[in-house]
Length: 325
Image (cartoon, rainbow, N blue to C red; front, side, top):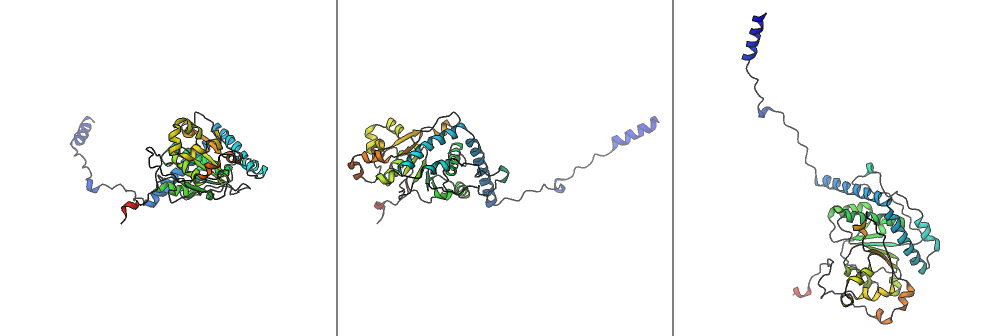
């Protein structure tokens, strides 16, 4: 028995080691086929849409949203009353917000268009948004965009009646905005957009002062200004931060309209402090506008900002006449 065991042990010790399989004969790991640029683009847009959806859910249930909505409601109510809009129109609109515009998270796809109610009510408001920023990568800009989307639904403004522009938009962000259904402007207007008699909300948070000045210049009349609402940087804050001579020289239309507007500040909460700080709702009561000096309305020179050192806006690229033959 012992001899048999010894013989088996010797044969085990003498056994030659197994040869390792050569690298050339190893089965290769299958590499994933390279994704097409279109597939990558659609995947990225799906991620951005999902992040917008998540931010919109958080904003909708926040105390800030309900408080900010109350502020906007107070302003728009007075605004529409002076325009002799039907008294019940705004309350009807503001009483029917729902979250149909938010797609189920599992349903978010690159080519999906979030559902919305395209009922305009009797107010026929339009909206223009400037300078919202790179929302695909910046959480502050993303929250500002989600606020805009909720506001459009609350006021029952069709997304196709909302014009959006930022010179910093990437191609991905433009495609996402198209998917969301808003209208992306192709040219830098520098804020020089006339409302052409249509009641319009301008949503322009943390924009350069010149952008507000240009907007006022483009609508420099009692009739036009009385039909506008501006959600953006506090004009009172601008007056407090800038020297009077600087405000009057560089931004004359803001300086002249300070006595012809009403302003309500946005509420401040810790959750959205860095996103909506220094933000107010501005509207222009016709009674106040009519009390301004007639000389104010006669001055309508287009702003040029030649002597303005800190312009804070991206100018529209135009050819310098001096360079042409």
